[in-house]
Length: 438
Ligand code: HGY
Ligand code: MN
Ligand code: MN
Image (cartoon, rainbow, N blue to C red; front, top):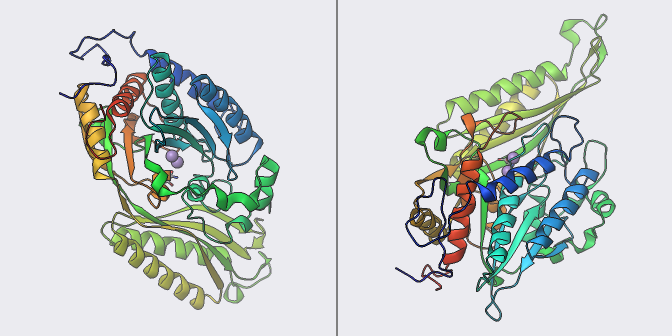
């Protein structure tokens, strides 16, 4: 067996390791992670609920809090021009390349505390533990807290990670939030210089890969009775905003036959989208946002806007689904004499996780006696954007009942402890070429 970077092996849960190791108090590392997740959950614009959107006051407060934790873990902290918080630890070797470990710290509306933040806080905990043990890795590490992963403020997602990977589309700085504030203005208000956003792009040749720990957001690990899983691939995603326009009028005066009601037209469109999703194997089609104008009970609606999300593990299925949805929506608009505009806001292909990272994450779990399975991700993660830059790998952590993007989601301290220890073991043995560094 390869020599370890340190003669220390992790005692998980009840202490299943077999080597000469100090025993850890149960969930010692997870206890701090859980408490930090609670502190982050309190940073919200939504009262009891967690709503922490990109480039807001709440995002700024979270960045400050996490910066302190990064510094305590021995990381040199900076915020890049896309509002991404980065904590760097230099490697022992000269001109060492860098492994990125991260996730996001913005949330959907009324979110749960684990989505994104778990991966950031777990990565900091692993770096803190290495520092506590006085262990220096031969390669450099950057712990990354992305913003703008969710499309909850701007109709565009993965803003921080696409900036880092150099794959932000032209014109993205002009997208606006619901109050008409552009991404350019919001970046400035946050203290970032938008004209420098392209400078945040990294060179793949400097990087060893990107690792993310994230809750599964689905029921598979729970069903299999395992704490963690290694992600094999991520589904591709297309998103677009639809604007349907008709003519408003008084609910009591405009005869039914003369109406051009944007809402009833949009309602028919929503059912068509669901129908395409239902009738196509491997396709998921969802409308998750919807608004109307003038939004008055006594007015025929003039305008309906909604956001469509189409996913599949197979790119051809997703593209075909998007084409079919577009065809059906235009036909409905024509029949109802409505104007129709569709704007693409996101389009990423499905990606496979890197085989070497999959093998090494799985081997790390095996070495410390943690049962672990491989599974695909139907949800999208920053790794999708980072895959343009470097090899990506992900570790999923079990959650209760597969609930996600809702406040009742829960992840146990036991599983979090397991994830931290798998990450530590992975870092200790990580070899970019698939062989042991030690
Ligand atoms: O939409 C997603 O899959 C992720 O939660 N941002
Ligand atoms: Mn999410
Ligand atoms: Mn997430």
